[in-house]
Image: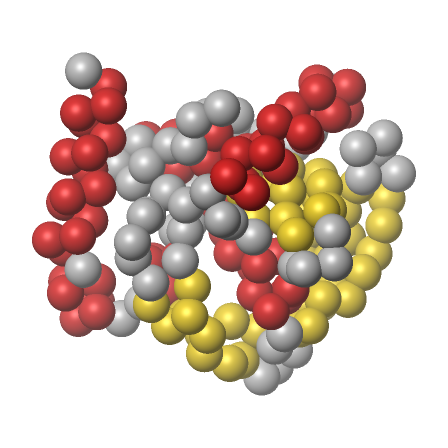
Length: 165
């Protein structure tokens, strides 16, 4: 399983709702393996070329498989925290996110759950949920910060083009 890099058009598309749970169940282990091999804490399906609404994550308490996530409530307060992304290797920046989110999602068998995520796990959920809507963490940065990242982003896009040759 290969991680798609910045510049790949699939990273900017909105993912479709999961209806075939067997199909995504079959991708779970390979996605987790890919995430762990690259020292990630989350990996969304579009990042591996699958345009469906699910992601894997591990906040430090073991892996979770989140399907069709929907943030149904969030704190008013936000906090800054450093983020990176497997699709943007080597780029890190402080991003403002809600301190907590309440997530409604389905498990790998379609059962609906609700859970409150706070702090770092809430950041992971928001970051990965953004991927399902074609949003990258750099989109949350002020324009002047994004401009400063232009040389690094260009380098990643060149890497991606070299890989596709």
